[in-house]
Amino acid sequence: MMKAVKNMKKKFKDTYVYPIIFTYEEGQEIAVEIPDLDVATSGVDDEDALISARELLGLVMFGLEEDGEPIPAPTPTKNIHVGKNQNVMLVDVYMPAIRMAQNNKSVSRTVTLPAWLNAKALSFNINFSQVLQDALKEKLHA
Image (cartoon, rainbow, N blue to C red; front, side, top):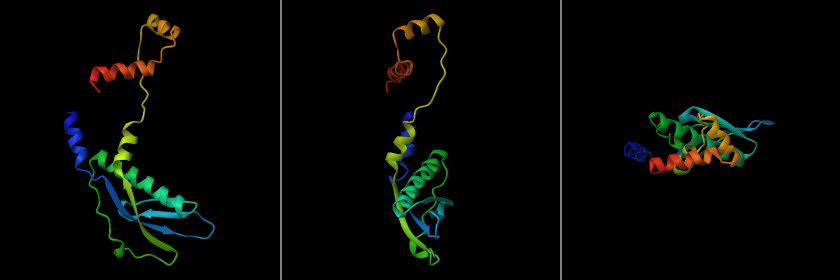
């Protein structure tokens, strides 16, 4: 089963590049839209807005991949028409880093132990999470 999951992941691209639209309004953050994905974010300046767009693109693409949803084709920038307070640019995201970060997040699990074992482990300052992780890795040959 693990082999099937790894093979499934390989069909996805390592890098996605999509056009984004920056909208500038006096006294407001820069609004950033990724029209092909129907999502938006913002930033206090151009750099912050671009970083926010890249983060958003990574999370959206990761979600589409994980859910098995179709990946929309990016619209060529020449086909995007904007107003005079807007700019079009491209944003890219390197997905291997996004995938790794998302898959390495810790999750909380509740375990039940005999009271005597819990007490003894506590008396030895045992890190329960680390022991469980080590045991699972050994059991799963991971």
